[in-house]
Amino acid sequence: MEIVITLVAAALLIALGTRLIHRLNAQHDARIAAHHFSDPYPSLSRPPGHNNPRPPERTADRRPTGTWP
Image (cartoon, rainbow, N blue to C red; front, side):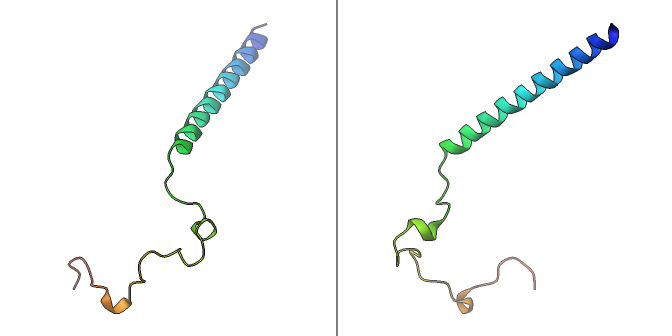
């Protein structure tokens, strides 16, 4: 009888843990969906010729940063 009670308690804890994880994942997905960070595929969502708003930077124009000699 004690084994049955132990198994039922373990199954109940597993079910409650699964439900908790499912709810936390749903909350996280809702938070992510509420914020629009950027276009997932910018080349597909922008018209041709409008994918790069500024000219590309040349490697000669780059300046080193930091204190490394």
